[in-house]
Length: 225
Image (cartoon, rainbow, N blue to C red; front, side, top):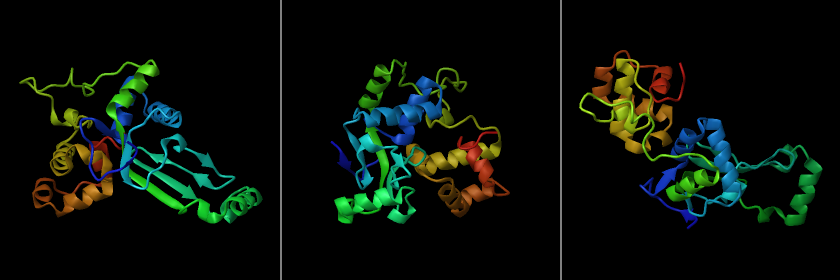
């Protein structure tokens, strides 16, 4: 079912940023989670991959060859995979790359840049990856067992996988982000969130002075104290 779609995450699909969060719960490390996801993608484990824009085969994710000038970086924060091909004179092995271009002809490669955005993986395939890797997994949100309100409900920041707010400003930022973007907030850049917050009269009246970027990023767990 590889291809493109304009729909966002569903209960059966997870954006890459959510896949990383789920895997990180099992292996206790974001960087290890990213490494494991790319490893299994390269093995062809993920059969149902969707996103908007161009399609980039998961078996090539993470590829990096400065000599030939080919790169396929994976940005988990934005759930984006890109294909980048530098001009031949920018490749460190210029002569080899030039020979390759002449042999295969430039049109064979397609465009020099392509992006697959809002990349999603099938939840069951992510869980089967964890099983194969010998890692424990749980569908319960991180912290939901210990962090509950007095009436037993799970706090909003836990539901949306945000850190516990440490100030009224951070709590207001989280509430605004949840109200505005819902469960898709991770795919929205901090800059975009701040721009939207500046235009929101209720937020600007509630939070004065307007919080700096650092406060936004700490509230969303994008920057550590």
